[in-house]
Length: 371
Image (cartoon, rainbow, N blue to C red; front, side, top):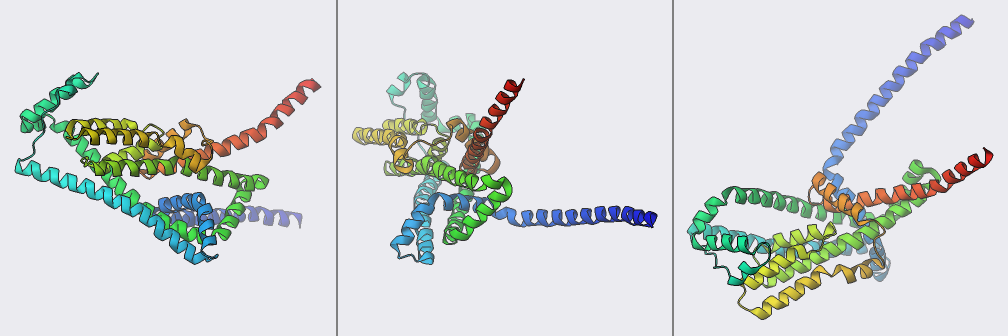
């Protein structure tokens, strides 16, 4: 009897192993298939979650103003945010397209003329002499200058095309993300319960705390970094559009990138202001634009207290690495998602380390006392 039981048990172990392997394989196929089906929507959904978490306090106020009507508040939120994204994008894109088309027509017709460089350009430190020489060469014989600079211009052109493509994809993803965010905020109660349930499954008793830290970090980074960068970009683009700077949309996009990675937008706006001084006939207009550019560049100094109340509780190096790494991994939209995700990871890690550190110190001290 014992031998029979042992034999049956011995046979059961391989059967259970095979059964478990089949279950794992089927589960893996389902997970991989779900990921492949969902992957085209991954970035908009992640971005939508970030927007929903960051802007939910505003949504709650909007809902209260509308008498607690949840669906109406969601519809108004989607409409207003889409307008705020699409109108500046349309203005900047129109300026960019008009400038590009005009430049292309003048090149084809041979009517493009480069104005002679002002004499004061040659006196500028470091870059003055080389800039004056190149500018003067383009003024004297544009065809020869373009032929000489052909490889460099081709490289710049390819980069511009890739940038425009990434920017267009980012705008489309942002549109979908805003719609998703509006729907998520209309179902915020269920989403909050799901987030806390997942947090408890992953972190046990610390799950709620991790969810709270994640939400606070998203709001901090989005409002304290991303929203300010977008504001500076839009203001810079509008200013350049008013003074008729060619390709204003491109420069506004560069301002956005520079501001997100926590560098001063003056890196882009000061050269643009120099161009305005060199080409604009009105000194008053040039001076006003320079002052406006400096105000926009330094706007984060007084916008951060408005949006955030106090500084972002994440080192700037973390934001810089997240923004650049996110852009490399996912294009323009990765600037935003990379900064937020790495900041969340940093906050979670520091919260875990600070929580475990006192226990480890106490254990070491007790061991040393016992020894």
